Image (cartoon, rainbow, N blue to C red):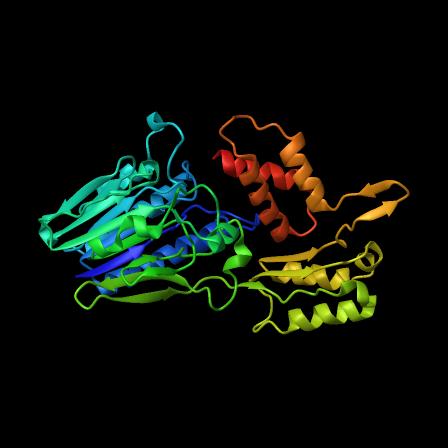
Length: 395
């Protein structure tokens, strides 16, 4: 059996306040076009089973345009693949906080041969293709992972939306997913395990994968930059137990090499370095999403940058982010007074000054998350970082 594994579509995602013809946000259109390309490819491949492992939409209340386009694409897929069954589970982005709100994903269950699991863990039996899919949507992920396959099915698939306990994922990904240990899912019990939530394509076992997102939509967008972070979806052939990645063309996201020694350069040297780095982008910056981080930039240096040229980059690119960071705070001793570094101030605030809104919030975990944000953002404001981490922890 050929299984297609998609996840983290994030339809309706918006960014950068740039509009395409017709008034749609450009990044929303990018994601919609990537989804249409995925549907086109699925129709060519003709898999017997399609599993979508959560986060179909970017928010629990997507726009009418995003809903309508998603419905059209799923309906087109169903009509073109009369022998294919599709199973969709809800992710954290799809799941409203209040159960009585209802889930927009249920709309797609009105399309022939599409089954939706949005609230409870349950087995979906598909006797027409001799397969069963055990569905664990975001609200159903708990500490009990003793899921069992269907003894009456020839092919058993487990699909779950959550995060495996890994330091790399914690640093690079959105928060909000439940955590699990890979061994707890017992991939040896299943023909295939289809995971969602982590936006990078990742193999956890020969039959256990994150498909990754179909576009770059993470909070930490730059972690998905570069040619090694291609977007698309996976197929898995159960007979040969082989997987294959199907690439989808997406808008380029480029995180340029950082300039670490800005405080050792003259203004002319720094401007020349910027021109060289940006000029080295294949095909130029036009239409691309680009970041350039410059560390240890003094106020005087920043004033002397070639801002006219930077404005030209911003006009040409979809988004050009010049991330100029002031020199890091250092410990200074003046008489009997000692000034703290930013990390020391952060730790003192979280552990001793800040009072969480609920007792369930773990201060140490918030501090760990805040330090990760601090590393990502450079010398950003500690209080704002702490607020972000606290919000993530409370979710």
